[in-house]
Image (cartoon, rainbow, N blue to C red):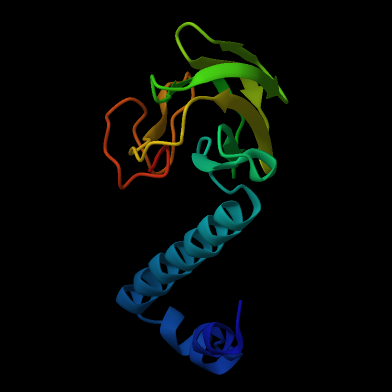
Length: 178
């Protein structure tokens, strides 16, 4: 309770005894006291028991030539959970250019199916980032536009600021690179 609330609530004995002589003022005082106590109790409960939200999942997608090569590209997909709760049973669809072939992949957590280009994870705790790297090769001597795309298409967790699988590119659960 700050000083202003305390001063506005403070009544000296003289004022209190004079108010109690009038039943209307006594009723008003008791009602005010009960409301004031409920307000203080509500503030205490809210400050000691914050309501937690769900997971806050986001993706980032990085592409670059591998070690300066002109025919090898590394694709890095980063899955981040800013919390406050775990992200569970996450499925990420990664669309890769058909003109490139997968040579290898490294996954920090979960499984990657090269035939469907889907990365599945059982769980990611808050304030954690998992990384997956895909090494791809192809003929890059002729000019072409390569598009890389990653989206969280499903999860058992509610996401605070995006909807998995809806294809909305302004959300943080989807990334596209050319």
